[in-house]
Image (cartoon, rainbow, N blue to C red; front, top):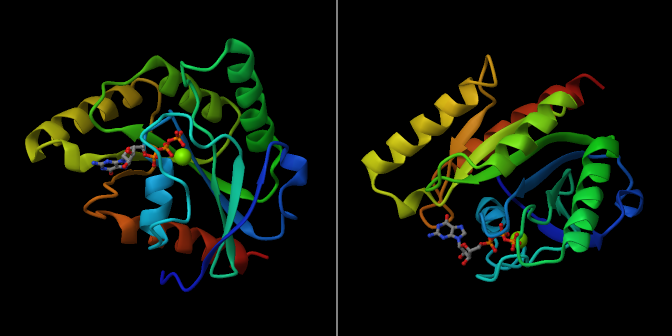
Length: 202
Ligand code: GTP
Ligand code: MG
């Protein structure tokens, strides 16, 4: 897919106020600081579309972008950010859960996982929650440039083994880096294929 236009539309805390659900939508989620905003900028070829920060917790709303006037891309806040109050965390979680469970045009979620870390309870719980609710999702392992080739392979294999304990077939997964831009095309093709299939069925 060639990105011709990528525009920020709006930020919301309530899914009901999001743009009318008339285009296919893909949302990116993961722990704070995992690289969601960087990945969005990478795949849309735009350095400043989504705000990037080295301070976790930068993205605090449901942010809608429109790509090629044809599909919505959504940057969601990170979950499990420790440095906010319990009350705030619960509020974020409810906002995210309501959005995921009620957004009619949501085609797939991409759960981002930092490829350097072993499987964390909070990610597995989130992934399994998506599964229990029947929400289609893919996994993107981020920051691949931070590990050497062998360490990366070892780490991803280990993660896939952990996932295999819960899932008979693994969800689609990608190993990405916003620095080297690896798998940019694969992620875009994956979205394009889904868009083509869905639009053909309409
Ligand atoms: P929140 O909005 O706070 O939840 O964070 P986020 O998941 O949107 O992360 P963001 O894209 O803001 O990136 C967090 C930090 O990680 C920034 O300092 C980025 O420059 C860095 N980063 C993101 N992706 C990569 C990557 O692929 N490689 C490297 N080396 N650094 C990355
Ligand atoms: Mg962000």
